[in-house]
Amino acid sequence: MSMSWNTFFRNEENLELLSKTKNYGWPMMYEDAAQLEQNLKQSQYKYIVILSSYGLNGWILAKDWEIQVKKREEQKV
Image (cartoon, rainbow, N blue to C red):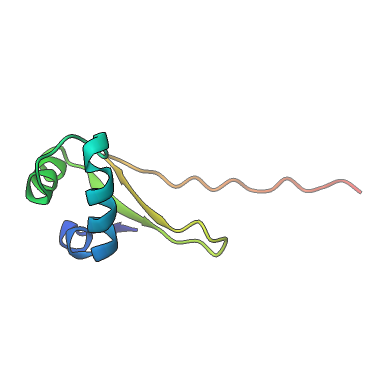
């Protein structure tokens, strides 16, 4: 689910992760959170939240995204 940038940059956990990884160039080089937010918006990135019943929860930053559903093949008995 795509979320607003206001939600992303107001979340303490997101800000903590960005702070820890800033010097490693992740998710891109930036001086402060305001510059990162501006760069992501100008480059038309989206903030996508991933929620799963299998425990794979988190978020990604992407310019585009697509959900593909693969049907299971029936097993032959």
